[in-house]
Amino acid sequence: MAEQLRHIPVMLGEAVEGLAVQAGGRYLDGTFGRGGHARAVLSRLGPDGRLLLMDRDPQAIATAHAEFSGDPRVSIRHANFSSMAEWDETAGGLDGILLDLGVSSPQLDEAARGFSFMADAPLDMRMDTTQGESAADFLAHASEKEIADVLWIYGEERFSRKIARAIVEDRTEHPITRTGQLAGLIERVVGRREPGKHPATRSFQALRIRVNGELDALAQGLESALSLLKVGGRLSIISFHSLEDRAVKLFIRDHSGRVQGSRRGPPVAAAPARLAAVGKAQFPSEAELAVNPRARSAVLRVAEKLA
Ligand SMILES: C[S@@+](CC[C@H](N)C(=O)[O-])C[C@H]1O[C@@H](n2cnc3c(N)ncnc32)[C@H](O)[C@@H]1O
Image (cartoon, rainbow, N blue to C red):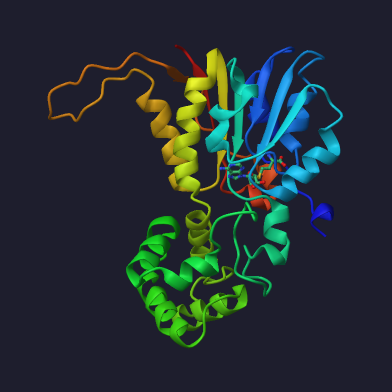
C-alpha cells in the first residue's frame, strides 16, 4: 500500500538551512512528497508563519491532507509547482521556496505506478495520475526519431536509436503497455553491459522526464519563483539529474548580473542582479549516502533574491 511506503528526505538539514526559515514567514514547498522537508520547515515557522504545500501526485496530497489539514498555518494544493504564481497563497510574495525535484520513493516502489523496471505493471509513469498521457500512450504514437531523441537527450542512452527502432517495430504486433515488456525489449536489444545496472535504467528515467514534462515545469517554476520571492527570500533546490542541475545553475547565473556574451563578441551590458548564489553547489555527505543510497545523484543549490 502506498501509504506504508516511506521516503527518506534528501539533504534535509542543508536544504532547510538554505531556506533560512524565519518565524512568521511565508514559504512554499513545491514538492511535498511525504513531507520530510515540510515538517522541518514547520518546526521553525512559529505560530504565525504560513506554508503552502504543493505536489502533482494525488497520493502525496492525500498524505498532506491526512497529516496537516488541521494546521491553520498550512495550505495544500494538488498542482504542478509550475502554476505556483496562480494561487492566492503566493499573492503577497514568499520568503522561501523549496523544490526537491524528481520522484519520491513511494512512487518508485509502488509497482502499479509504472516507474520501475523491477516489477511488471502497466507502463504509466505519470506523477499526476488524474491527467495527461502515460508512457505507454507516448510509445504508442511517438515517431522513431522522437523516441530516440527522448532516450538520448534525457537519458544519455548510447543505444537510443536501436532501442527506438525495436520499439517501433515491436509495437506494430504488440502495443508496449507494460514495464516488464519494455525492460525485456531493451535487454534484448542492448544486452547486459554495465555490471550492477539494468540496461533499461537510462531509458526508464528518460521516459519519465518526458511523460511528466519535468524540465518544462522546472523552467516555468524558476521564473515564477523569482517573481514571487521577496527581496532577501531564499530558493533552495535539490536536483537529481544533470540537466535539471544545469538549468538551476544557469538560471541563477543568468540573473546574477554577470556580464553576458562570448569572449570574442562585443561585451553585452549586464542585466541588473536579481539573484545571488548562496555558497556553492552542495552534495550529500558520505554518512547520508550510507543510509540513503537514493541520495547519490543529489545536488543542492541555494540562491537569495536581491531585487
Ligand atoms: C523527491 S520527492 C519530494 C520528497 C519530499 N521533499 C519529502 O521529503 O518527502 C518529489 C515529489 O515532487 C513531486 N513533483 C515532482 N515534480 C513536480 C512538479 N512539477 N509539480 C509538483 N510536484 C512535483 C513528485 O510527485 C514527488 O512527490
